[in-house]
Image 1 (cartoon, rainbow, N blue to C red):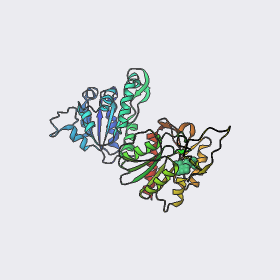
Image 2: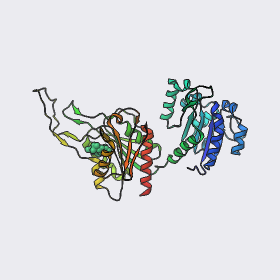
Image 3: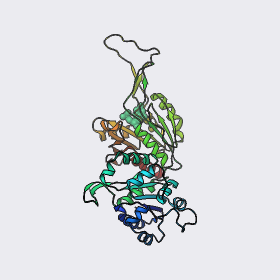
Image 4: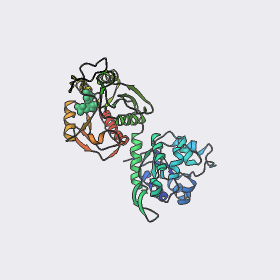
Length: 397
Ligand code: C5P
């Protein structure tokens, strides 16, 4: 993979893994990136700025007041950077960055930047295991930052554990993917549905399902972060709307079908993550149903299949259609059947025990070419994999 002519700022923190920053710079250059380096004061104690200046043929910035920068170093560096990678990202850097501190050139550049940021954490396993560290990481991820590692392995202290920085090639791979995804959906409109639909039986009761909406909200968040215009049609959920996403709340399958039909004309792609109810009550009682005999029967009628409707109606493969499948048995076979029956491009399939709630999922992507089983990962990371496929389908049409 290549980073041809992309401008990358490497920020080096103060940890023993700083020695690997030298190899990271070389690796990025091998992929044709143009690299500049900034270091915290502690970083410069672990590895000499002279080495990195020699490699990049450019002065290394360690000081906010660097007289070599006629303007302000952090303003110039952040404006120049197309991506920033912090390696090693110490517990201290993560903490300060997560609170928007700007008390050295690395932190000030991060705060001033508007480009994708990748952190490669490295620290002692006890520091990595702290709740505070994970709260800081959650905050940074919430602000759009991406992480690679750390990994388990031998540490400088002679111990084994989780906290070793990822290898330079792996960091460079993660950065290449991050740069490829940055702005790659600009100019595209993506319609995402999320959550359950709720079918009322009477003024207080309904038929629902266990969908939490997290997967759809993750897809919407990542699509917007990658530059798409996103319309998110959400059933009743308790999630916050991701930044730069237009949200339309609905309740029933019929309402969702109406809103989808209003927006589909402008959509380049539709990602139907919603767990749409297959049936609704034939009649919704206007008054609360009273307790009666031993048994109660409710007459149900079928809801329209929104996705199958889109699949049947589309011409020339537009819009790109992605469906979801939650199965309790033979996940891949069920997904392949849905791919054909609903005439869609891609089905994201997972087991019912995995799919609902939680931030992670394990799934299979099924398209006409075959099945791609995906490792367990966060719903945000899965969203990126789905959106990579959507981007490739859009560019190929
Ligand atoms: O057939 P099944 O409900 O398992 O298919 C799931 C996929 O179809 C999901 O993408 C879901 O959003 C969509 N669907 C729909 N309308 C329905 C039922 C499901 O669009 N009535």
